[in-house]
Amino acid sequence: MTRPAPDRRRLLAPLVPAALAATATAGRAQDAPWPSKPVTIVVPQAAGGANDTVARAFGARLSTAIGQPVVIENRAGAGGNVGTAQVARAAKDGYTLMLTAQSAQTINPWLYRNTGFDPVRDFEPVMSVATAPYLLVANPSFPASNLKELIAYAKSRPGRIDYASAGNGTLNHLLGVMLNQRAGLHLIHIPYRGAAAAATDVVGGQVPITFGSFPGVNPFVKAGQLKGIGVATEKRTKLAPDLPTLNETLPGFHANSWYGLFAPAGTPAAIVARIAAEGNKVLADPALVERLAGQGAEPAPGTPAQLATLLRDDLKLWQGIVKASGATVD
Image (cartoon, helix red, strand yellow):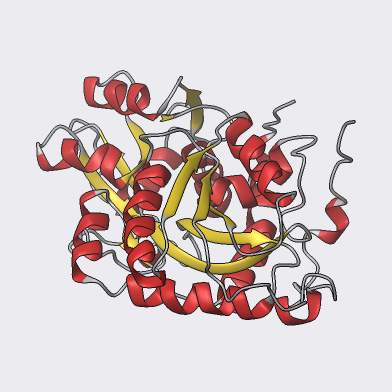
């Protein structure tokens, strides 16, 4: 039976705290204190990707903290929708969690006609785990070296400056749409089959600029094959402290790529709080901080309420950007 499409009118409604949302059944005392057996963290993206790497580094240390094995299980498909929908239907006992990339929770609901899950109704936010900055980069021959110069150059050539992305509806596509909106530009989107192909063609000069994830483009910047224009985070990243934020030139332009930990809706609030507490301790581990930095990510500790707010705000942000882009996936 096909799962009904989520009621999109509800997506932006204020999120109900986990303690109030849990049902009486889910709130009953467990037969044994949590955790009394292995915990599975589902990653709804492919093995070897950025989210998978973050999940495995985090899960290994969480296992030590809670005294139980933490198993990472990849359930990729449909841009993250397959694994996410499965976790939405999982037991509400704290033994099945999901560590997912922000795009699956906040962009897919607007991009796909039917994701198979409701990002608000079907999940308990547990904690944010990490953020991964996106950089705006250019071929070294591109005349502009900062955002102010890029905006002026693009405005003098409307519809004549291209930007590459990993494909329609991807975060680097939508960041370009946002830049067009906020700066009044007419950059032309050139979609590729993946971020690596997009970055390669910018290095080769076939397309002048692109937004790329830090680990995807920073090696080219360090090698002098690309130049950094700015970082899309609200504040400067510790990974590249000398690179200005785009927000410094274009106030209000910022968007984080984040990884968040979720549980199925109805998971007891006490278990959610315990996982968040242990997870935040884990994120303070210097070894994990170093491991994440190697993957182009920074720890982003927080509470369930903070992740709920982040989810709500980003759903609102990407609703308008996806609509402006015209991108859909059926």
